[in-house]
Image 1: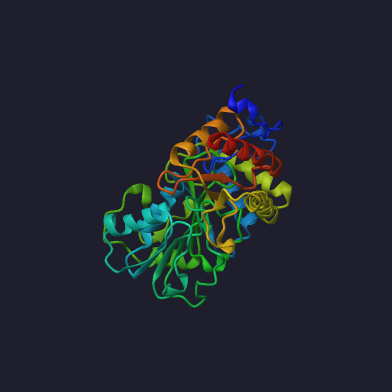
Image 2: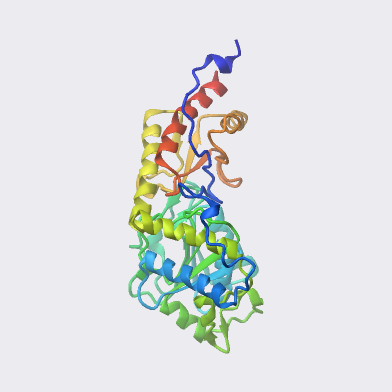
Length: 378
């Protein structure tokens, strides 16, 4: 008898085996036929197009309960485009503290030092699984950090390390945190994300949230380097307000905008961001219980308090070849797709636990992890 057949195979499979960390699973009950497609084929600058863009901007601000004066804008090229735009537009007048503990944060460090060639840069870094000592952040400096390390599964515990009396700006890459973790907005001057993550939206668009302090910087400082059109947030020394009222810099996909609106409506229907955060935390609890019961699997994040509840990264006691077979088996059985660790991260698994993933699907997946492990180690 084939060895695989001799091992007891679980009988229940996840209803949705999509556990990718981006693009992430669609919301429960998603049906593309339910989208409002009245904007398709229309100019994004028509009244109907601008209204649709303005509505997602307004709904985003209301759901996130942003403070008075904060602006939301839709920009090109996902979270990466949003982060590049703000770094090229805002950095330069003050020293920079760059905090990173995974590949995307390291990428921002590379852009700051190799592309913008800023010289007064202080680096606070840590290995995968750890956080740097954020108490070393200087409130007089601009500070760049990821709220949640998507490729390491390590998040900041809170915003207490950010001074309320800071003179520098905080620039936060929060693409796998917004709508899944509590964000202290008053401490965040610039926040970027993409709706392909926690909301399961389509890729290609980024979102920038600016505080009044960030707007003041934009209107009082002109970078010394040439500014590509796609990065320009000001004109004649004033903020381009249209970006934050639906007049995007380049042509957006109105289909993606309709898809984002569907996700926002769903968040509202389940009880808002608090409910979305709770769903993600409940999902993490399923994995936490499984890890507690099995010695061969562990969290990459060393401290429980910094353990991500979205991009959950796990170490497995397998060789590289065994791990490849482990992931392949789960894909062949159609119980888990796209759960391998990020290419630059330590070998292991990365299972998305954001709110669009059903707790029942994660519970169904756990016995399959055991089955796959038994198969590759038998």
